[in-house]
Image (cartoon, rainbow, N blue to C red; front, side, top):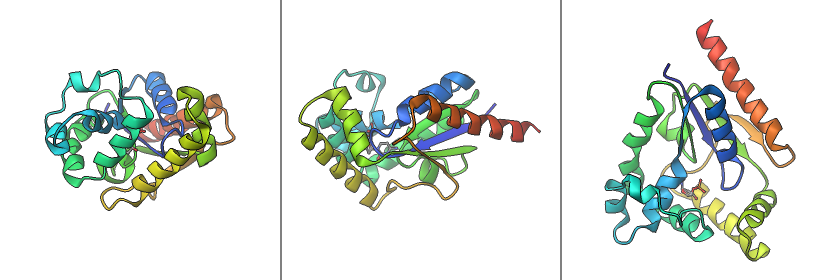
Length: 198
Ligand code: DC
């Protein structure tokens, strides 16, 4: 079956958790597209060349989850040629046999505008900063400032800015537990599969 679940949203909203759970539940493959931008941002030299020559080794580095790597990713992600270099890989992944979940910022709007399911997973900046702080530590005020900075850059860039697709379902995780959000996401995907198979 070819079936794409596009999950977008800001940093630390819980996209990865929801995506992994949905992928595991339906046996779909999962691609964390933020990791592509993180790997490009972490490479030395010209980011466009880095994006064009990205390989498995780049994606396996152990230092891609830090706050610094997130900021570097957000900066290179504003470059249209970097984004263009990563489009085909993401689209091929999305249409692979067996179903796919992709999470990022522009999956439902640009990469897979025809995705069978589009979710926008979000939460308040304060809640997201607190989650990042619990995960990575550091200075809480600084973490919040970085969340605001990254949101602003990701939402205001010219090319493929972060925004919900018109037909995306928004799941706000500020006041919901992980289990509730995951159940909602699974129910939405299950309903869409049932409709398709009807
Ligand atoms: O999801 P993340 O925090 O790992 O993403 C890191 C950065 O990469 C994010 O701030 C913006 C960029 N990004 C993007 O522009 N488009 C995507 N589809 C995924 C991530």
